[in-house]
Length: 381
Figure 1 (cartoon, rainbow, N blue to C red):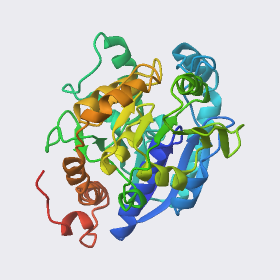
Figure 2: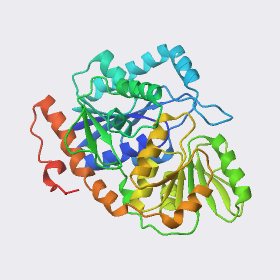
Figure 3: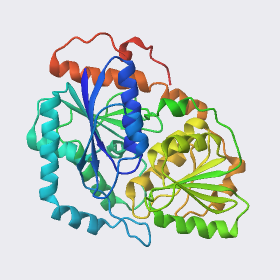
Figure 4: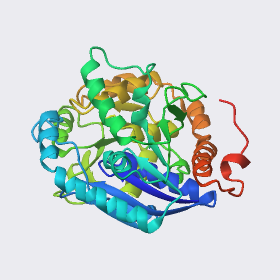
């Protein structure tokens, strides 16, 4: 089976999920022929992704969320206006995607929440089937625990989510826990996609808190808290291309530019994780048994949902700001869901290969050799 990935390149979550799924497919004897990555203007594909994906990577211009530079919150109106003005540029991106599909002739497209992936399927209507993979598809489930008084935000986010899945044969919804085994509401619940390098990590506790933030302006909150509590050592990772690789503020506060292997090493050895409620980071911490303080980016509805779901799944606590006192207060009472979460994650290889092979078989009417999805026994959960 020859597979083409289309990946939303904003943040690190969808990129690391793509790396993990390539590893799973490779082990099952399948090929990821190319990876198309949607990027905003002025952004670069992280080095860790280029090193680990082990497939040709082709960037294309894609919409992204725009932030308030002072507050670190999302500017919804500005985001919509800006990207409507760039419609012609995005049509050119759709042509680029089509050229790659025509050249590669894949058996299957896997779309990691890239809106132009769904629009490509709708506009060009290629015969190759598409499967969509993301945590955001879980928000289409009526049993998902949404924030109160969030009807409008829910409609906006789910509208974008549906755009990414236009024409999709199947939507695989990544989840902290299993809602249901059977497909419901056009969704299939699946475990998180975690990289094997992370799963092999041996967790230790070196006494520092690891902080991950999506926007450099959020660092002001970290510095303000640190000035009042210098006793807790903090190592912070940020997406700041203007900063040096490592910026040491004082003996107990250091900022690091995004670096995949370094981040994983420090994740394994930290005392706890503080993160802007991105799904992937919370999953990695849960797998390693690390307590998490989730701080959703202001006006980022998806992250607000992640924080609620993460708390219900036992990941830790949530806060509206980077007030790390919330973290230090709940640490003595934290009970890790590590055993149950790892059991759920062990299903990943079997379930993903099973679902992807089934979609490709129906379209291509081919008989693949028995894949990992058929050979691995089902584990009760």
